[in-house]
Length: 196
Image (cartoon, rainbow, N blue to C red; front, side, top):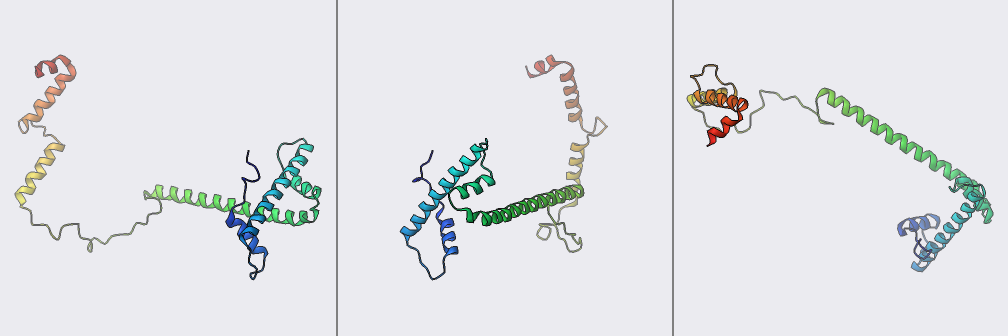
């Protein structure tokens, strides 16, 4: 467990608290900041120990806000209790509003995602219509004219690869391959004989 010497408030937070409570014309030395930091650490530790005693008196292990109020009264700082109650209520309202806003944002994003999925679009992507008259395929301006016979040959080759002809004489190698595969499925030894 850490000792009081090891504990300190973050310097930036502490400086904001000090500056907010002092006039702008007042400067604070480094040693004074350190003294305030150590004093705050001691005070918080002492108050937490007193609140823990109040909770244990009630038979609980968890410190509740009422335990802190009673601890402030026990250490002689009862005048801070009303202000603390008001500030804690404001804080609770802020936390609740943030949670509700976060839940609302999350629900809206999920609804937006579901709507986009139903339309087949990506999340949040805007699809702009393209005027085909204005659109130019990539590289078309620089491309050279293609010989028609080459284009037809490429198209026929692609068609035969995708859809083999029903006529066995049109593509004999495809028929042999199909028969060989059928034989391999029916007779596993045939494949071994063929490789030997």
